[in-house]
Length: 432
Image 1 (cartoon, one colour):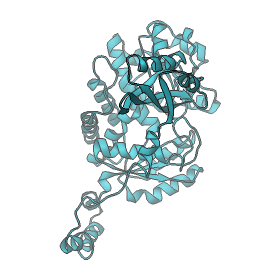
Image 2 (cartoon, rainbow, N blue to C red):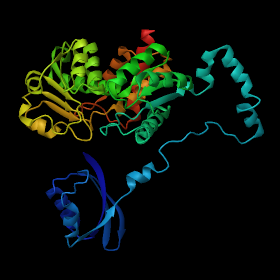
Image 3 (tube, rainbow, N blue to C red):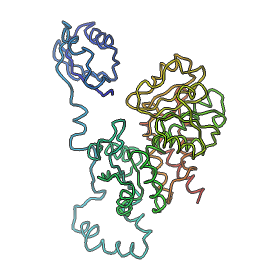
Image 4 (cartoon, rainbow, N blue to C red):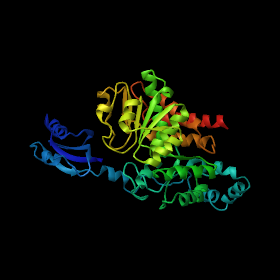
């Protein structure tokens, strides 16, 4: 598995010095993801070079850098760890507490009036507490990123990252909730018990098939938005990218044969949303018989991987298996989305070289484009649940905002998330 490796390399401040360092990196078959000059002292420069390298495999890079007469490997940067030190989020007051009057208003005795008002009319909690600005980000750590079952505490940095994006893009307070629980029924009970503390529930990194059962039971028992991001957030952004690709190649997505490789939470979520959107033929491949049976119960059909690649106009892969798709399986004009992170089933440039009309990976099609606006819109509309119209509205908005040379818009653009939120809220209100 590839992980970010951040090296600190000192070079002589002379023409060609940096070029020789980069040449060594290229000769090792590595790509520079980021390059930054962090310090210059007289005749020397210290570079911070970010690479993606296979864990514990260094390709002889360190030795080759040390052998250069113009460079010295100083070590590894702790930039990533430093950004996580102390956590990435915190709870803080929105109001000043500088006077005795302010203290009495927001705490005792003034707070009693608000408590009694909410007792008499619970709906007022949406207006006079942070409920309508809050999302519980719930995980049991059984399917963290592409890392697998590493436990809820090890997954906390991911949950904090989600919370940071909620705050940055749509002003919501995302609160990580870590649960040491694997039994789906007990997991549901825990979440239902703490649900009054939040305006909405985002399920995150819960392994299939438990994730399906947990979500369905929560939706049946709670009157607030519940969404499993690995299923529906990923599906929304994937549908948006497919809308863009289909429009540009002049094809009707609903008439295309779509192949879904990997039928875990993301794969099933994508297949379900595509069927709801109107795609008539969804073909699936997976090693798990129960996953294939689930797809068939939804109206899809199974196929062996080579047959799926030969038949389908659109191929989406969410397996976590690096290099699973052989280059010679790609056919002319196919749309290929290999979404596993950090290592794709086939690199986009390889698929394009084989004749694919469009190819993308999980770095470009990222659910960070979807979930902030989805939850902001649902809470703004006071929706009691997510429905497909809300998901379609988010996908259409993302596709419409995509630049001509991209399938989806820039994930760091706040206006994108605001537009998604408005579209979702409008869809929710139209369905009431």
